[in-house]
Image (cartoon, rainbow, N blue to C red; front, side, top):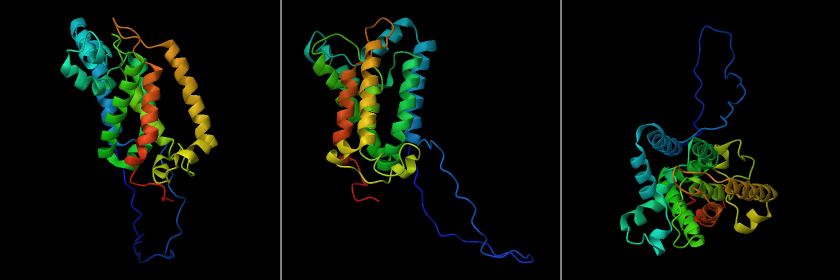
Length: 258
């Protein structure tokens, strides 16, 4: 979901038959909307909502079980009893991000996605964003896998990829005056180095809040019908670190931006 803003020259019309003096005095500048959600974010939200609609109201129990089993990420596929399942092993590190453990889980993730995904998309564009989303999804999944080698437990939810977007946003959102209030302005701010980021009080406070929130949410857990805990802090941490460290590889703006 990507919007570009162009600053064009102001061409004022010439009116006749009036006493009005030109050029007309400019009025107050239009305020940016709080959220100008790009199409890429809308697309992901739409897909996740569609999947949850199918799970909640359309598919039968057997179909829902199969969807979670083959679409969800299971560590046992890589070093355990399910290691013969080649196709799900290749696809589930991405598809699990479009499955959720209920409407509450979905709504929370999609709100977080809109907040932190918007400035990232506006900055790097939809194509880079798509690759970055896949990369952080995979990184989150295998961080979960490392902590649960060979275990038949199920991971679902976009939290890992969204944590990657959150880590990426930490590299530039608080480097200027844009902040979270103006994603379009934040998107053109310079990228902070790792050292600069870790010296920023705003970033450190946010990361502390994010870590505490993840510990609390992981303790609560999110259930999937007929399955065990659906999300884990390991996936969130893996996605965050991947987004935080790898974001410069996708960033066309860089550290020289104003």
